Image 1 (cartoon, rainbow, N blue to C red):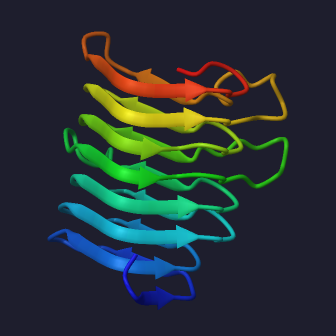
Image 2: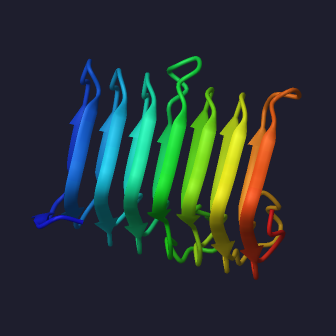
Length: 193
């Protein structure tokens, strides 16, 4: 990340033409909510927050993430929900979501969680060592995952079979495709994929 360092929680809300955040480190949470248009995060590091590192919710538009690190947070590394749009995509490249865990056995937090009505694309993503799933993807359209690693994601309570996977995909459409290429998913509590 760039030379700009913020040492507290940061919020971006209710923009109407999208928003771009480039080159910074945030020691606390980044909360993005209620926006219209494309949200772009490039070269952003968020770590050691006392909750979810990066939260993007009530997003009516595409989400583009590149060179983002959301590590060592006490909940999710990154949580994205852009279902306010009927078809906007989520694209995440060259990013990592590692070692996110609240250390409470009754909760499970994925390194990366995405819920979208559009196409979800991951390329060059690492989501490992999280206290839940490495990545959990829910989409009504296609899901594409390439050149990515999901390993050593664990849960303490094996009763919940929706967590502890390297890559957990919930494709809500019976006709949408799932494409995986050069994906490594190993040493997770439950399945790799």
